[in-house]
View 1 (cartoon, helix red, strand yellow):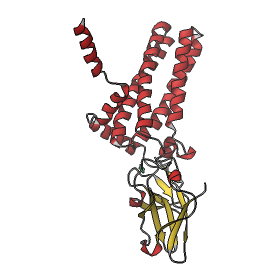
View 2 (cartoon, protein in one colour; view 1 turned 60 degrees about the vertical axis):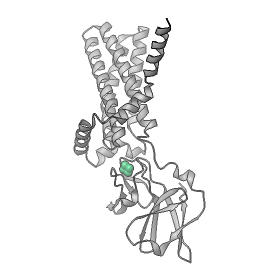
View 3 (tube, helix red, strand yellow; view 1 turned 120 degrees about the vertical axis):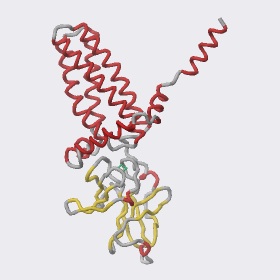
View 4 (cartoon, helix red, strand yellow; view 1 turned 180 degrees about the horizontal axis):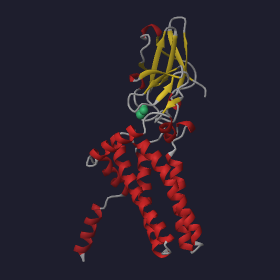
Length: 303
Ligand code: FES
C-alpha cells in the first residue's frame, strides 16, 4: 500500500501543468525548419500592401484575428449546445457551416500575424495553427456526415473538434497573454512619462536627418532632427518593441515615415499613426519645443 502511494506521488511530480506544456513548445527548436519555410512563404505570398494590412487589422487599429476567433469558436460551441439539447438539427448545421466559413478569414488573419513574430512565439503559434486545422477537419467531416444523414456520428466528430479547438484556444491564450503577441508594446509609455515639459538634450547634439535614440527617465525615445524641426516618438515599436531609431526613413503619400527594422511596421512621423502593419497601435508621439538656451523639451502629445 505504502509503495503505491509513493509511486503515485512520484508520478504526480512528473505531471506537467498546461502552462509548462506551452512553455516547452516555446523553447523547443524541433519545428524551426518548417516554421522558417512556412513563415517565408506567407510573407512572400501576402507581401506588404493593403491585403496584408487589412488582415493585420491596421484599418481598425486592432488586431483582426482575435474577434474572428470569437465568431468561429462561438458558432462551434453553440453547435455543441444544440447537439446536447437535441434541438433542431438544421440549426446546428447552420451554426456549423458558419463556423467553418468563419475559420477561413480567421486562419488568414492569424497566419499573417504569425509570420511576423519572434521565433518562440512562432513555435507556439505553429502548434496552435495545427490543432485548429485538425479541429477544422473534424468539423468538415462532421458536416459531411450530417448532410449524409448520419447525425449521431456527425455530432461525435463535432465534440471531438470542440475538444481540439479548446486546446488550440489554450495555446492562443498563451501566445497572446504570456508571450504578448498582438499586444501593444508601447502602451506603458504614457504611464511612465509625467505630463508637462521635460528637458531631453541639446538640439546642437542631434545629427541632421538621422534618427537617434535618447533616454527620458525610464523610456527610450526616437529623435529625428531635420533642420530646425525635431520629431520625437517612443522608440520601442508598438508591435514587438523593436528599436525604431535603427529603422529606415521613407515617404508614404508625401508623409515621412519610419520603418521598424524588425518586421517592417511603418509609422508616420507627423503623429505616430500606423501606415503599415504588423503594428496596429500607433506609436506614442511627443510634442517638442526648443528653449532659448538650445535645450530640446518634450511632452507626451494629448491624444
Ligand atoms: S517590432 Fe515588429 S514591426 Fe517593429
